[in-house]
Length: 145
Image (cartoon, rainbow, N blue to C red; front, side, top):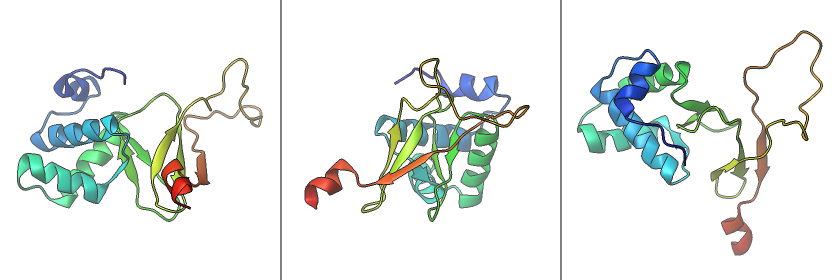
C-alpha cells in the first residue's frame, strides 16, 4: 500500500480545510483501504460516528464530495448500487463486482501501457477517467457454489 502521508498535510495539499469530519472520513477510508473495502456513504457515516460521536449524514456526504472533487478520494459508481468511496486514487485500477454477494474488489493491470495500448479514441478527444466494471463471482462465492 502506498504511503499517503499525514491526513492534515494531504487535505491541505489539495486545497481543503482541515476539519474534524474530514479527518474522521479520511481515517475511516484509510482503514477501509487496508481491508480492501469500498464503502458506501452510510458505512462511512456509521464508522465516522465511532470516531466523532455525532456527525450527520449530510456532513459526511459533503466531506466525501469535496474530497472526491479534490482528488483525495475516488467515487466508484456501480450500476444498481449506491456510490462507494475509496482512497486509492490515480493508479487507474478498476473493479470486480460479485453478482452473488456484492463484494467489490480491485482489479489492476488494466491501465494502457506501451505493451497494452488503450482504446481507439476519436481524433482530438481526451479522457480524464475511465470506468470498467468486471461482473462475475468472487472466489469465496465460487467455492460455496
